Length: 255
Image 1 (cartoon, rainbow, N blue to C red):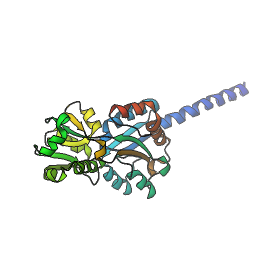
Image 2: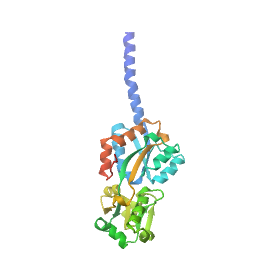
Image 3: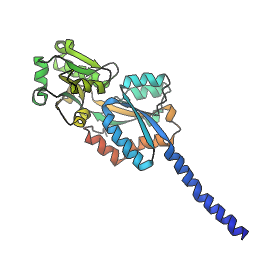
Image 4: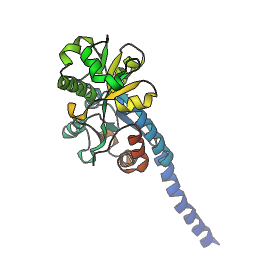
């Protein structure tokens, strides 16, 4: 009887340990710094990841350059989803991230967006004619889409003419808001924002007019020992669910 009781206790313990470990993993949460252009896709990917793993993903959205400065000053983010492919390797080189975890998760597309002007058919023409009061772009020093906008305008030969009418958003999210609220008649934003808005129209800027916007992800040092952080990056990089969301918002995935 005693032996049977001890055996039963061992069996119960063997079953309980994995359950406890699973509960602990599910209780883990992640903090992810995300470039503002990827706000809606990130939200959907985070929800899909939680449904599959039970892990809560907390996002902060902003400009890639601003996040880089915060990370260098000790911000406790676990993961960075940047809007370029240079910030993450730079953080790894300086000891703030895990170099081997870096990969490009999406390639973005620049658009000229408006809720009032016929930019879909006349985007470049409207820029050349200058029949608008304000054009919004993201701060080119901290936001890759802002830098791409200036590059494209210079390629088109309109930058000097429209420069006095440019209003800068601190990130691509604020840039979009300037157009959505009517404070700017048009603006250079990400295709994902136009798709996510469900209103307005846009002109897709020719890819030849700006350097490809490859957006890379990386595991930061605060998340280096978190299994959930590595699982999230694997989910983003390989899962059909994440890839479907990325494509839904107009991004491509470089091979």
